Length: 153
Image (cartoon, rainbow, N blue to C red; front, side, top):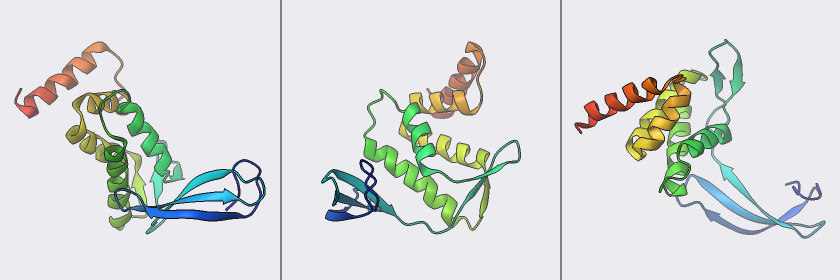
């Protein structure tokens, strides 16, 4: 593993343990060149997934991009990071076990919205505002109204 600080080729694993959700292995490493410590994560990848964008382009599934988008929606909310990580892992698992090697980006958006709906209603609306491209305040109002109808408030 290359050191992120000095780019030295070799590092030594100092500690390994599973993550809280058991979906990855967290490894603490130390660079043999500069002595710096850093953390890596090892995850299972069942298959390569290509995301089909709305303009027809395809790009490799990027877990970090999904985690970032969901993290932005959950920003400044009282949501534990482990719950966000579980949501991202769950979406990735669903994609990998679906049997499809090419997945429309809309499918990922729907899976994220479905997960956020059960996690936090504000994060759900934030994500939807970007995903559904809200352009006016009434878009928020209509969407929030539809949530109240579903939840019975």
